[in-house]
Image 1 (cartoon, rainbow, N blue to C red):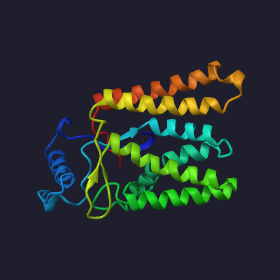
Image 2: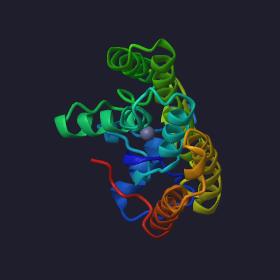
Image 3: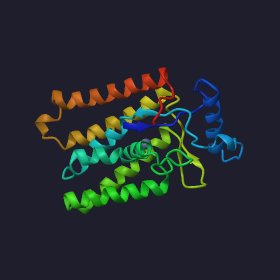
Length: 228
Ligand SMILES: [Zn+2]
């Protein structure tokens, strides 16, 4: 879910474009199933068979969290909701990728560290412990959403986790629409009563749903947009 690098896609539905892609898919599937069938020679940087860029459900979580605790700036919650993906961008741009994609950014230890960092920054900005804990929870929510939409590593040597629903854009859109709409309702409750049904408030919901819909169409037409 997000504006940021994102997502694993089930290779069962992914068209294989060439030898390299096939080998990558074999590597990824072998790891996902916990077997040792992945060819060692191709183990340099196994990647998920499809990686995409946008997942708006994370934004839905961020605006919902802002509705719960308005003292926490919305921009901070949006950054927190996508922090693992921004960390991915840093990993990609600095060339510090590990042998398993997402290990440094989406594994359970990595998310715990990012959540702690987000909570500390939030505490420094807001001086609000509840808001700080909320920011940490929003960071954790990112990977929970990713487990639905993609496939992520758990820990070094551990199993991979995920349903890879980017491979099924209609189901993905349904799931993300529920998250976006739920978050929007929470956000709406934080608005003054006379603005809760304003055009601007409704436009926010429509825009988020439209962006997610467009993203799912892209996933459907163009599976496997590279992250790095
Ligand atoms: Zn992610």
